[in-house]
Image (tube, rainbow, N blue to C red; front, side, top):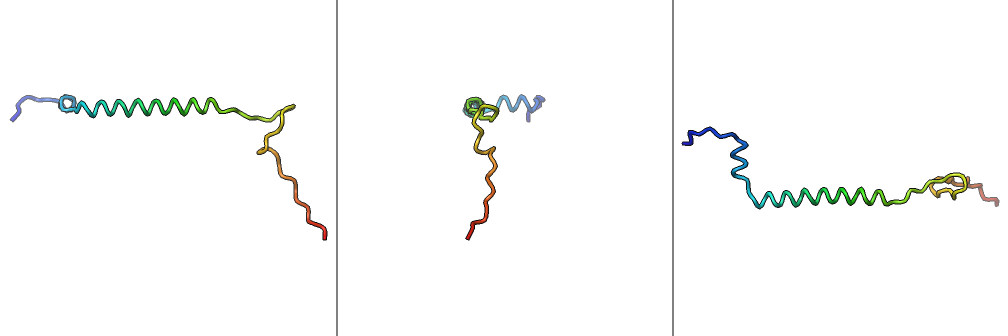
Length: 71
């Protein structure tokens, strides 16, 4: 029996798999890269706004009321 007292953290560090650490680093880097790409895509999207002298956007126009057809 081991009479030496060892902390749980020391046992985890000693028994940590090296292959798993590389995989965790790779997944972490890919997550950060995907967040950067999403932010970059959001920053590159054009902002369309309507104002005086600018053509109004289609979504801002209200549809014309439909009149009943004459028979």
